Structure formats: structure tokens, C-alpha cells
Image 1 (cartoon, helix red, strand yellow):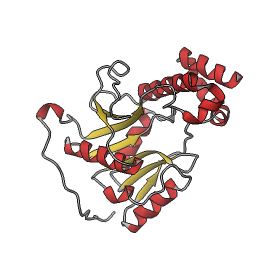
Image 2 (tube, one colour):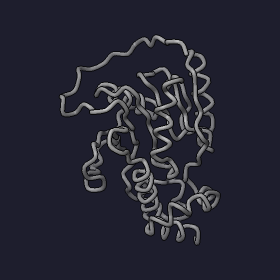
Image 3 (tube, rainbow, N blue to C red):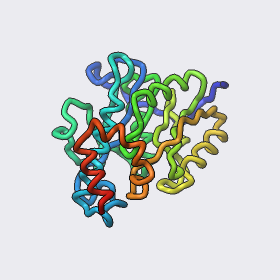
Length: 240
């Protein structure tokens, strides 16, 4: 692995000591307000806005539970959309910050900047659409940064469910056609242009549609067995 010099990285002043992370690793979680009409919009035609939002909330809670670290492994920052949303009642005790940027790439780049500004050495980002992402997934990503510049978790729709780096890489997020099946391929191509080595994790599927639910029903079973609320919501969704 060869060193890559990144230009244009202008950091703000260091945050107060209370805001700095205590460990080396930090997980960013992008989360949406589970509000009807704003979450799981591709499920709204089939389920209606309220049921789609409730399913999103339950799936997100399962992923949040699964990615909870043990002492000393990593810390978490939650970045929420919309920026004005108040999620403290939903996620009490978590550090909640607004997403900032005109598109997904700008919002992710800004979140990484904030994480490194707080003192992180390795940072991974996940959304809340792939309930199979776990603590083990996150730890594997951090370990992989010992040998690679960039770690990506491929999603079946052509995007990615995880991205991890050990320094700010703003160029990775520029010129990408977001929310298209070409996101992963374009990011890998951009990494090659920048001379970065890439590690791909196990592919996982985001749960965005009823077809996704049906395709992953068997894989969801272990999660549903310990989450009765989610199990009931999935059963109702699949019943139509």
C-alpha cells in the first residue's frame, strides 16, 4: 500500500474535549426521521406511509442494536435527516448531529470531516437500510484498514452499505451519480484513479422494497426471532 497525499483538506478548529472521541475507531450512522412520507418511500405504494415508516424504524433499530460495540471497540455518531429533525426521544443517549450537504456525497464527506475532527483514526459509515450489518461487519472493516486505503460493503442494488477510511477522502464523493446502480462501480473506479487500494466486504441487500423483503425472508429469520415487533411488521408487509 502506498501513501496518497490528499489536497484541499482544510480542517476546522478541534472540538472541545468533551466532544472528542475516546477511542481510535468511530462508526457514523446515517439515520432518517421515521416520519410517515419521509422513510422507506419505495414501500409506500404497497404499505402506505405510516406502515412504511414504522417498518423503517424497526429495521433501523435492529441494525443499531446489532452494531452496538463492546467497550473500547468503537464509538458511534448519528447523523440525521432532515437536519431539523429531533430524534432524542427515539435515540436517547446517542450523539445526534444534522446531516449537512446538497447531496449524499457532500453529506457523507462532511460527516467524515467531523469524525476526524473529533480525533478518530479510522472511520466507517453505514446507513440504516441493511439490517444484516453487525458489529462483526464494522470490526472487519476497521481491521481491513490496516492493509487497505478504502473498505466498501457492496449492496445488491449497485450501491454500498458501508464505507471506511483512515483519513478524509473528499475526492471519493465527488462526481458520483448518487442513488443509481453505478455508485459502487464509480466509487471503485474513483479509488483506482486516486491510487487507493480497496477491500470489498460481503455483499448485503438493502431492504427497500417488498421484493427485498421476500428475497431476504430466510436470512431475516434469526433477527425476527428476537425482535417480535419487527417480525410482526414484516409479516403484515408480506401479507399485503
